[in-house]
Image (tube, rainbow, N blue to C red; front, side, top):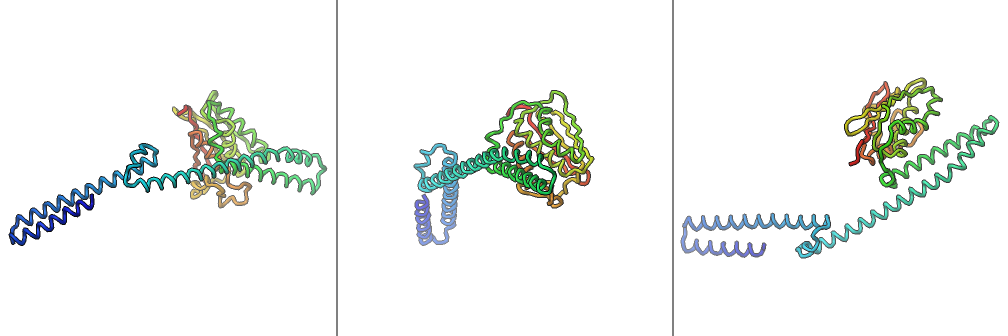
Length: 319
């Protein structure tokens, strides 16, 4: 089409030159030439624009796997075939990487599960030993190994894509969720004389996976116990709205600096003022992933100097 338009333009130019030679100074010759050239330029611009739209539409069809037969007949068919091949290679590579992560995550979980029995037995034997420096050292190393295994399991869950595949939300009791999460942190809270205040309306239910959500809530409670001072209080309160349930966790710890509120959800992030605390910075990342996998969300409100408030929003209906 471009060649045809060029030939027409060349013909008009030759005709204009001949007309000027025969009718020198004729204004109509110039006007006609300018009009025809302008029409030709407009037609060429419209053609190129429609051609670009058609090419983009063909590419979009390929990307969306629709109407491939029409694309095969287009002038960019060779490019489209290369694009399809490249996309197929990338999809194959992504599947292999995802499968590798899943296999690695499953392997890590299996190893951690197999290690729990000897670690539990070691901890029991340590408690039976007479008090001594050696027994204390063995106990500390056992706790450290358990901590590292727990961190490794959490990391494998984040990397392996296991959460979305294994989270199955159903209508559950929020009271049961809170009780299950509290059971894991009460022993550590008792050592610091931290008390819990729970205000959950009777019969309150929401849509969530009990086991996974209890782990997410337990992570927030564990952080509250870890950073809250002795003889303080952690408050857990829930209320129902039209489409969701809000679960608030308030502690009386040092709070979170304003500039770090948006950073705490990042993987391996450690607060600047809490570098010496135990943990590897995976817990809150895993917590957010669990809640978001169920269509919910989790937020943190800064209360620097007077603790902080974590809010978990759980849906009350299936989308």
